[in-house]
Image 1 (cartoon, rainbow, N blue to C red):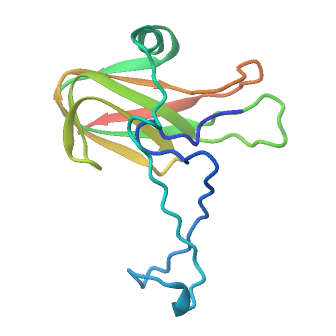
Image 2 (cartoon, helix red, strand yellow):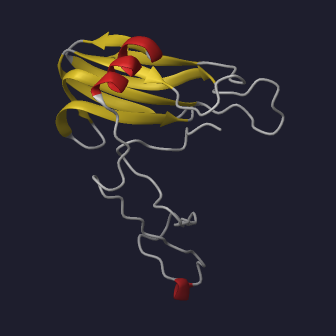
Length: 166
């Protein structure tokens, strides 16, 4: 099965923990069960050492050189999104195709506008056609895009990314 729902370095569900989605009304910043909204909020703490999956130098090189498709980014501002396509399973009627992709950006200095932190490397995911990644590239870097899966034989499909330099 695909591990597309996993957000590397940005969150994960701890073993045995189940997070229920909360329905948040647009008119309220603070909710409580007693207000009649009936929501449940679960806080899941992810430790950056204890809950990390280690990729060694060889595995990273393989992702960069053999697995991913990549493009060079020169200094400037970018918007990255899924233009079309899906991650899919050939012949599956149970699992519909899903527009998702994992991104590894490295080799220079970049700022993800969601975090506003300049870094030499970062991970991100795009999930759905309406989600965007807004980047400020300070030093030239490389954007790599790929999928993670546990069974490649039945994979069928692709996504096309739109990488717009503003």
